[in-house]
Image (cartoon, rainbow, N blue to C red):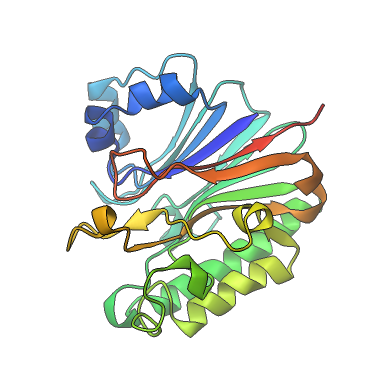
Length: 254
């Protein structure tokens, strides 16, 4: 089972840049998407053609902002949008998709923003999300994926010293990244590649992607007890269409 997560930074834009061809080439069983930036009304007018996939949408209330979606080749047992907290759910940040062996939680974490002006908002989001994940994990293993908007370790960004107190690499955000691991989740990419330097996001400025001045902020974390079924984790950093690269894992329950 191939699971891919991708912050597309605007669904309309990424479709125009070949998203359907991406689906045909890589044939993911599940695609978790962040930053769809499109409301239901606008999406239904366009009528995207994602053949062979069930579609589940959680747009933000604010037009052209945030939002998540899941495309799945098999129909899930259940799908739930939100955390049950209006200020986060209005931004379309969390979807929970249930499969027989696990829950998949598609998440677009808040950006702490310049000057860490939204750090308190992100901290509260982390608190509520981790409590929610722990409740889910009592029922069956949980795989959480998405744009975490934080580079957990110095190896996960090109310039750690210069970014020490910036959004995405502040001490507070990195501490929260560790709390998920301490609670029993495993960073799947680091599990397979403890020392590999590879990024999933690059600024649009200063030719950062061409120079590979990037950050690894897009991830799959998995309950430790399901790790024996995860056979691979990867970053598709050659795939274009967004300022983020798709990230993925492969799961085998046979």
